[in-house]
Length: 248
Ligand SMILES: [Zn+2]
Image (cartoon, rainbow, N blue to C red; front, side):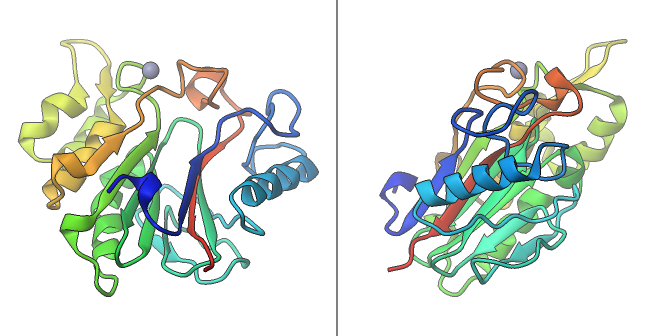
């Protein structure tokens, strides 16, 4: 079942377009802690929530770990976490990113979803595996019904990094997936495809390749659509992957 056909599911990937923020945060910056005017960010968040039929947007305090927070109410504090589990109607969650991978797991029948913010540190701690495990722990959830979406992120060609990143990630994915995840030219800098790492963690945890979809693109290469820390440095805004279950 394609995500667009899942009853009650509302989900969107925001771009830079349509917000109130001024340069360098133009225009739909949803990050509160990047130096943008708080009033503009609040207006942007309200606009996104309203466009999807919700009253507010709930986020977490992203800390590049593998911890998951279950958010049960439409409003409240932002706990430290990099994944959000939603199983109640009326709550709209969002994970924010500039180059990090933003992804979504959905079990349509059990009506549970997990939003994932995955940078290399979170992936090294196994956030992909942890997010899927949490989803499957929901009452009635079945692995065969899971739909996974990798919505945005930086591509492997643009993500040049040090050997310590490869060393940290390699144990989290099977050896057969290493060629898709890592490129280390002799004497050169390493390139890591974070989206491939996340996909490999999900496949290793039992998802079928047909259950995982990617939207493609690259945050660094498309300045008109995406914020990118690699491209723009700091400060840089944040786009978001948002999702929730509609109230009946
Ligand atoms: Zn790229």
